[in-house]
Amino acid sequence: MQTKQTKTQTKRDFVTLLDCSPEELNHIITRSRDWRTAFKNERNPSLPNAQERYEPLRGRTAGLVLEANSTRTRVGFEAGMQQMGGHAVILKSGDTQLGRGEPVRDMARVLSEMLDIIIIRTLSHDIVEELAEWASVPVVNAMTDRFHPCQLLADVQTFEEMRGPINGKTVAFIGDGYNMCHSYINAAKQWGFNLRIACPEGFEPDQEVLASASNFVQVCENAATAVDGVDLVVTDVWSSMGHEAEQAQRNAKFKDYQVNEQLLEAAKPDSLFMHCLPAHRGEEISETLLEDPRSVVWHEAGNRLHSQKALVEFLLLGHTKV
Image (tube, rainbow, N blue to C red; front, side, top):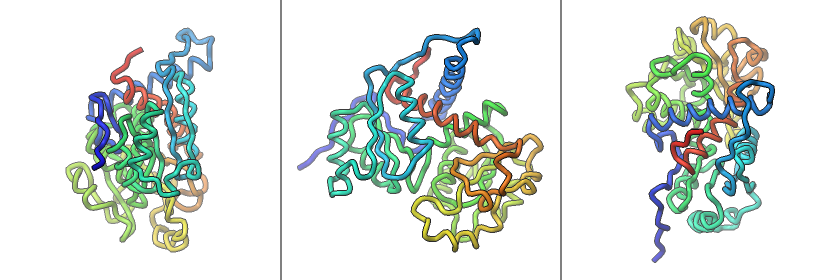
């Protein structure tokens, strides 16, 4: 009979935001801001706070398993490991034996013998859960068809850098009740903000996920109601990975859920707009919204580097301080 590997007491996974306590998530956000400041200082050595690079992960290796395409996720983790003194091994979909029938539990145990942490991006959330169950090193969900928790670290960091604590604020998510929406639901519960969701009929978030944070989430009948008076407006593409064949059908059903400058007028005057990218101009957003002064998508994208560094540091070293 096969048995799972014994997990050490320090083994931590990040499959969803619920794997960390609110206090731990706030610690990660604080460290993310530290990492952003350090990155800025390293690129500007004339600044008074410039200092020698802090490399807490020397000798550590991350395995980045990419079964789904990636830009921000890969660059953030790969560059982040290098900047922290570590190294990343990139495994694309054709580089592993999963496609040839190797059980996930076997790959988990093999990689645990060679790596310090496993980061995986795949459309099957079940794979990530099984990998975390059998691996004896930390496993990070870098996006699945159910959740995208790493993006939420960057989003919360961005909001708090620009507007202060997100606790008690109101956020509107407009669009597909898919992985980003699910992670926003978890985030509302963990950070204590109010979340309004507006989705076309048939594209609502999973009811179980929704019920888990019912005190913090409201499903609205249309986008205008959801955005009224909010602090932050968020959207995502209408046809996420795995749904490309449905694009024409989805475009028709989502046409009333575009986020544009007119819709944002209903939000607070100092509201922000975020998108995890890549964005489809003319579909889920207007052609010009990314250039609007309320849009912080480039800062948000840059924070993927810093928040992912803070996450890996936390999973491997705990509550580290410089």
